[in-house]
Length: 272
Image (cartoon, rainbow, N blue to C red; front, side, top):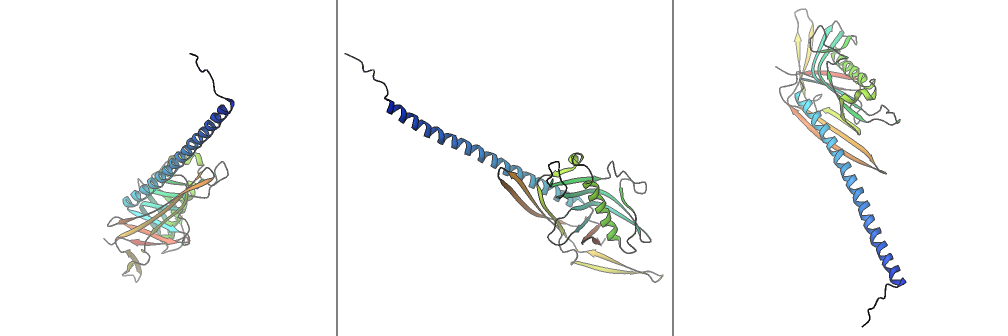
């Protein structure tokens, strides 16, 4: 009895190698595709988390604020800075001092990073801080504006000037030093509005014995603040985008609301 020791023929080996190559190529393609999909899904989760965290912090700060200043550019443009906290305005015959204790939210979509590209970041800055220490006139408050003179009866412009001071303070701080304030990356859009306050209010005129008068504007409750933010993250050769919108409805909290557009704001008080 003899054993058959015949091996594989050259043709069989070539066929086996061809089949193996096809299988390995397909397996490699599946692994690479899976890794890309995994990475893209992780990027989606990161952008979603970044957007939701930013939205939650913005709404939480709005809900806790005792006053607010929102002055937006033209309709559809981004909100660059809002003040959320206690706002004190002292009027010295048309010369205004503005004091603030609370938080400011700043969206910087224009400043360029080291790579020459817009940094697209949002910040949450508390006042007073090391640069704006407690004022001697109002302990625990930062004095943002001193002797601002837009003229009598223009308190809203003085508060808006305080908002501009805060915005410029952050934008003029070097990018590395802003890390302690960082609220969110990848911001491409931010719009915060007090829905309908400038259309839904009533006014009262106070008459003084000396013949002078004063008109006070009171907002109607509740106050509804609408927030819209959008993010965009570069991933590979494409982009991952996310847009969120939400609202905060506030009752019996805000003593003063300053709302306006294009550099001018009106003061709306809470009727007590």
